[in-house]
Length: 253
Image 1 (cartoon, rainbow, N blue to C red):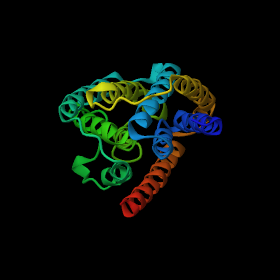
Image 2 (cartoon, one colour):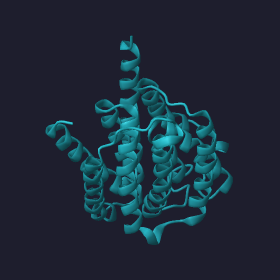
Image 3 (cartoon, rainbow, N blue to C red):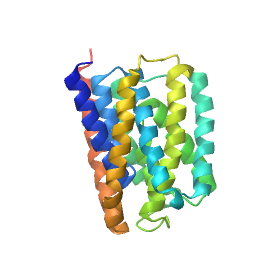
């Protein structure tokens, strides 16, 4: 990989980890889009998993006192069930389909009927959302939009979680999710990529730095500001992926 491209990736990983450090989301969405544009899908998935494990792991350490363990265990159980299923299927989608699925997901969750709206305190919902989220992670590289909506709850304040609890609990869950994704793309799916571990180490360093820099910004925000900006970010990034995936599908031979 050219030095200029490596520098660009490091800047992107620093910026996206800073973004995720504030909102606990959106950064991974941006990063996977850049990686998919620059690298083959298996290598992009592997590098994304390593950097996101570092970013989310360090975020979990910084906010460890705010982790809620019951929703985390429910989500984790759903992750495990989905991994078992997809390890038997071993299917990897092409880029246009992955990008379209990534972009459409948050809008589908947004228009769910009230009786199906997410409740982070419901273990059965945690299991279901975890299963679907892990499936999205294996098919598209991230599950952020679905997990984000789950922890935000039914409506503003409806989930009963403040911004620190959302960021901390999701970070802990994402470490597990990305570790499972890395294992999947390193062997279970037969899609082992030639990941440059020097680039991976630089990604880890950039992710930890960006996460640390973001802490003060999150502390200065209110819960209302956090939820408002989160909705805007998810909508903007997801809409971009729908357009990009549609474009790739239209120009594909």
